[in-house]
Length: 205
Image 1 (cartoon, rainbow, N blue to C red):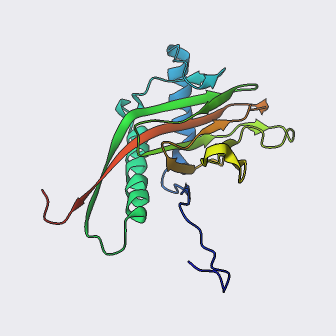
Image 2 (cartoon, rainbow, N blue to C red; image 1 turned 45 degrees about the vertical axis):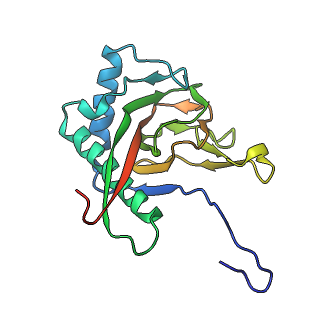
């Protein structure tokens, strides 16, 4: 889109969905209980997390109605995200499925996630179940940050996003991101996931 007579336009933007899941948020306390019960029984795995707890990536198979409803909300949000990226006038349906699973993250005081991305997935995302009670300092305490994806990172630095209970974030799987150390009391619990997406034009089985 041109801006006045200067001939300026924005190209290749990076899209980020930030949306509150109003149907899920009332169940956050129950989801928190389920995650903490699982943490008490299982050692978890180490991925990008430093400290804290990272579940196995099979959360979509946990047999609780609140978890199943949450995972269904992830798929629906992924469909919306994909549909929004399609060129105008395309007709058909969007198929979205988990690619690489769904997992829970629990961070306590001092825990963080190293910079990483999710290769092979179209979209990645996370949902904030609880954010704990963070201290006022340092700035961006426990926030997720996205790195400018352009080579050399010469035009900017990072985009910090404040975690909010009941909010989902979805972003391209290739986008580098990390979580700053959480300083405070309680737990910062998020549910992360990867998605594959496919557009099927009308008339194609």
